Image (cartoon, rainbow, N blue to C red; front, side, top):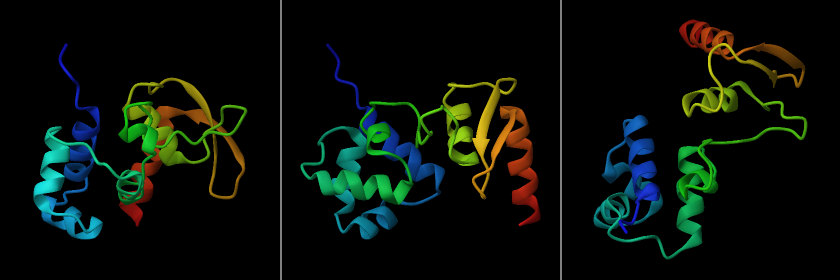
Length: 132
């Protein structure tokens, strides 16, 4: 049976998504570039839980996401199933948990409940980023 390297694939994709080099990430984590390269390739796994937590904090994702326990990068929802923020809803859209036409409920930056569609969130985020 072939061993999957979900952890390595995810930390590599996250690093590349942020346009960071292995050198930059290794420096921030106080590890060698060779060690990071081996983690990304799946040759080795981190022996330290602290390193996994540091990677999750650096990439702003959950440790569960890094370890392949969930496909949501940061699945923070309240008990009623509302997304706490727009970024969590976007993450759910990116991994296919929801699609553009799904009606969803999110909390805005003031904690107010907002019913919308996933497509509207993408549009609003694009406008917000363009105006920033």
